[in-house]
Length: 308
Image (cartoon, rainbow, N blue to C red; front, side, top):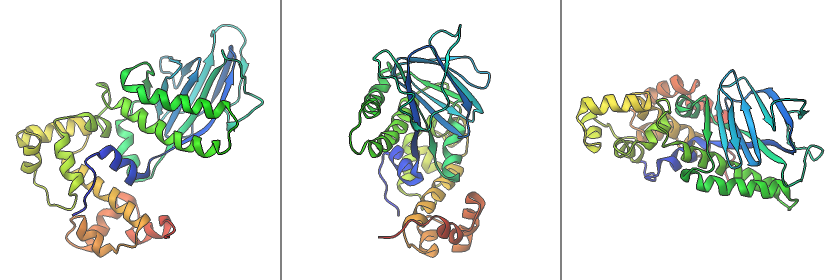
């Protein structure tokens, strides 16, 4: 049995190794405009101070105020504008790092940071389907209280010249992703996916069972009982909420755990397959290759972290 925390948001962050990256930022007094291609599957734009108007791939404009965050999923272009859309605006190239020549330290300057989310193939399969094309997280919303605090710390680091600011920004980037997902989880307009499943209180006990004991041969009746539903209603509700069947979700979670173990331990494929509930190492290898694209041994050689 693999024992995990009941906090399965933390489980996913730890095992999938979701990594938030702040790639750059600028501060400028309006009017200004910043346009560019989006090369990342999940892009993050946060307004630390002031406001900005966001346009992407023909969608309606998103008006971002101070403390707001936008998470963009599978967009190809974006344009940000500060001030009135009429008249000439100062053009700012998409920043990489903090270009001091672009920074405007005036208190009324609009201050914007951009970043993206990095994760592996199985993590993308788990997270991406449940994201909106444009998810506008309002900093003034009660669910974004901690998000506002993270953005305040990012502003401090961007505005100052303290030693270790690069390290600090990297840590705040992780918190920015975490708090953005927390603030998004309760939205009723999310597509089927992991975030909707996370917020579903009735399904959560069944998900907890699978996370706490992924190697067990779970029966639909057992999972349905945990959710206090009939088997039919549970199966329909789980698919409608997550986009997959309960056993497809369990399979993905097992592969997430397997990838993490292959990256960070010397656990043999034989032991790992038994721990995760597979009948044999060969059946585990087949399931792993079907999802991760390569056999476990190849994945380990390509991704293993240095062992201390």
